[in-house]
Image 1 (cartoon, helix red, strand yellow):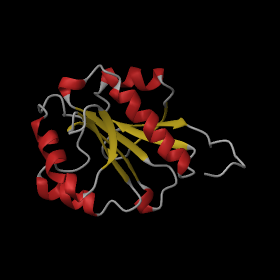
Image 2 (cartoon, one colour):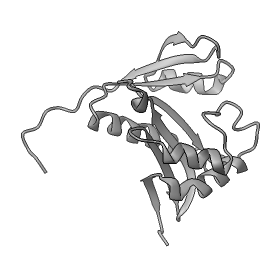
Image 3 (cartoon, one colour):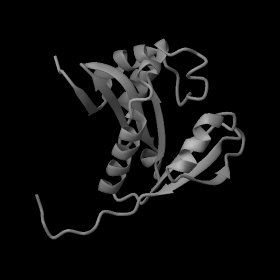
Image 4 (cartoon, helix red, strand yellow):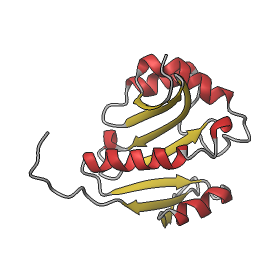
Length: 163
């Protein structure tokens, strides 16, 4: 049993625990987060077909307490879309920023210089936070009305040192 905090790539073997975490969220809390169905079959399908997209779990004491993803690479986009949800009981511990920082690192490692986020227009509390940390509104998604934000993350400086 792991005794601390870990950020891990998710795969099909993690589908049941991810599905259980997502299904346990209160409907009001998760009302703006619906990237796919939370049932086990859908989560299994998503994780089994992730390809170049990244699905990451945040764990505390071997229990999944958060989830974030970078999607769009499978569809040929250079700029991935960031999505995140943290278990309600673990809000306020900095896991959101840890997830965003980790997502930025993954993007830099893969050569992406920007990150996109889509947010429901009624998600007022998150709008202020996104602006505060550097996301800039760049549009509105046709159909859903979601607000589109981007953040420039830049490339890692070239290094002659190889590991």
